[in-house]
Length: 592
Image 1 (cartoon, one colour):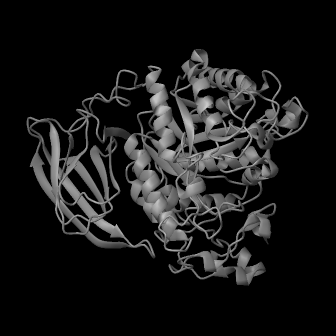
Image 2 (spheres, helix red, strand yellow):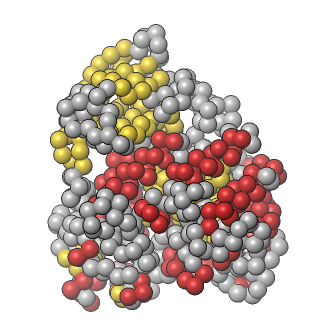
Image 3 (cartoon, one colour):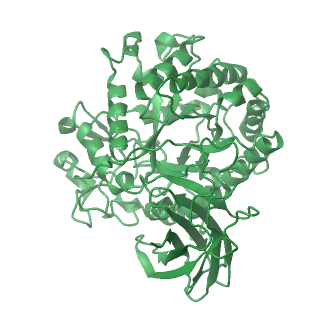
């Protein structure tokens, strides 16, 4: 998230008392939920995940309600949690998780367990330092004493082993203010290398389990002060040098599985920094991928860190559709583009904030709802009825404080927090924001709690997603493919901005998992190659093509058809999509 030196507290808003308690229009039964009892799988860098960034704050009933809404229980395949060392171990005694577990750690653990019960994978992002562990004696974004950070992440890893599958070692370390008094050499040596070794050691102990360890995302703030040891005093020049330094450290790079990048609509709606080194967020992906490739590090991946798309009318939003209004329609368009360009390129993880909170950036996929009636009781003008008959919609940007679900006190943020009202909602009674429906469409590629791996990549020779025909038209065209190992079916998502329901396309993908440039190759933890539908076997192709309403997110012009065929000698799954609309999904499955 965009931060500057005069307002670093904005990042800390994520550790203030907030809650969401969401109720999705998709599901009248969000308060009930079901548990996933299937055997869990091991998350590797070949797996694909679309999910949420979820930050629980100790309201147990609210967390259960959140976990049972379709946003998390049905459509997310993973949840990312920010773990502030300063919050989970505020005093030295809190390092004893058995006898002195902190309230923040209890809240995170409760939410993690809710995710595990529902079949989601979990990723932690570490940041901040408690006063007792920092060189300065101050708590927050300060340099830790030598050796204490690796000890901390080892404690967390031991406590959450078999529940947490991925760890990012810090947050936005390109900014000086994210860890004061530390230069880039300290970050690389102590936080990344030694931190990664500490976590890996825990996961390599019996019972041994795969774990994904990555570094840190980078803030897209061009004007913010850069960390000491990075080239330039700010912005994209420092970000580029940050990646160069990581890649130039063989000991460190050997310890991690991936580098990270923030995914955002910053500055111009698409993540621009200086306009040259980093012109947009997918340009940043290309820059990092090229640097890894040139260093013969094709086996190292890139994962998303903090991600957001703003929906409100503030200066943080951008009128990308040039209709003269900054609103949820812009968030709709930005989500189509950012998700399409990054997933098509090969980014295997993407998340969005689960709900509006008190941050100056209004970026939740869904709205707060008054799940227990407490807000309506205290501030009746702050809620409106839900269009689906569920809990009322909260229409203010608020902090909610209290010691339990029953005594929450709502407080509206001040003007400096960029408040909003129901006038900013394009559809006030809908519990979801408009761009939620685009996120939901893309989330099909990772299929919720099912095990899903990357399949073909657009343009990759011998492993391509071919889409040919007059229906594939317009200035935005995206092709993404995955393989659902749980359901044993391939998934293809196609977006065509110019499709009008009259054109056609022929679609083909390899019928089995192929040796890939970046995925499913000799560096993979598991060998998935050859899985799928073999030559001579018959398959079913289910084609769904539709448009998504730009006012309320509903499906329009929906058409679903099924076709049967057989894999020929060319080893490809094929189907023709007639009367193609903008959003098309295809499932290829083996016929009995």
